[in-house]
Length: 102
Image (cartoon, rainbow, N blue to C red; front, top):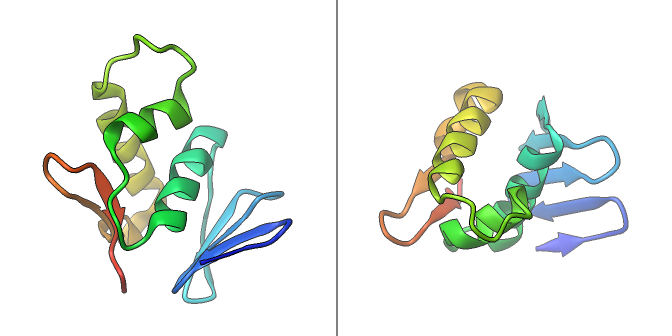
């Protein structure tokens, strides 16, 4: 994993902190919302390891009492935003979510 002042990259994945653009294999896939960017940042940094739903919830909500179901909703929206690359976000049932290593 490489984190510079403006780019987070890990394997095939790259995120620009300034523009919130997401690339897979040097192909721009999407421009993310702030919450989507925060979630994807955790996933890219951890790839291919799992990120817990609790950690993802902290990335999208400042409310400590927020429902973990919010994570599933935001992951669903993120997958839609990523189009055919949405399938790269995998559910590690009971372990959170991760980006596939491809």
